[in-house]
Every structure is written in C-alpha cells, then in structure tokens.
Length: 77
Image (tube, rainbow, N blue to C red; front, side, top):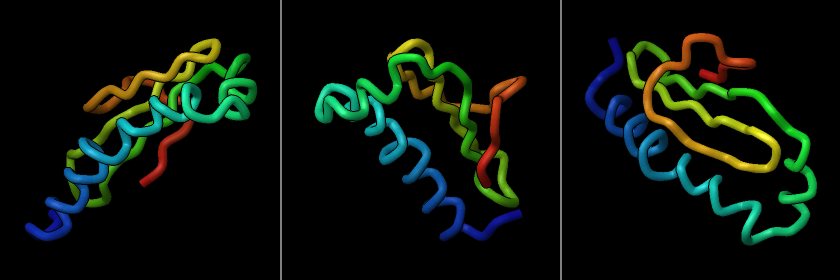
C-alpha cells in the first residue's frame, strides 16, 4: 500500500488535474481535429493503490470518469 504522501499526490492528479484534458479540444483546434475519429478508454491508475480514473474518447468527445473501467483500451500506472 502506498504511503499517505503518495496517496495524496495520486488523488490530486486523478481528481483535479486529469479532468482538465476535457478542455483541450475546445481550447486547441488541433486537438479537436486529432480526436475527431478517436474512440477508446485510457485508464490511469495509481501504483500500490486502488485509486484510478479513466478517460473516454468517443468521436471527438472526452469524458473523465473516476474509478476503474472494466475493459480499458490501455492502462497507465
């Protein structure tokens, strides 16, 4: 199990920073074009912890969801 500091860092990244990726397509037209045909799930998980969040890509839309996805396309720890 991760220590308190690691748990806190993971929580901040997964719950505060990761959701900011949703603004990329609206702020940067290049990303909107790039993501237009993208679909899949990228999961971010904290090592030695149960903390996780996943980003859903579907035809140009991005949704960030807290928790573990049942079948992600890719998982990053």
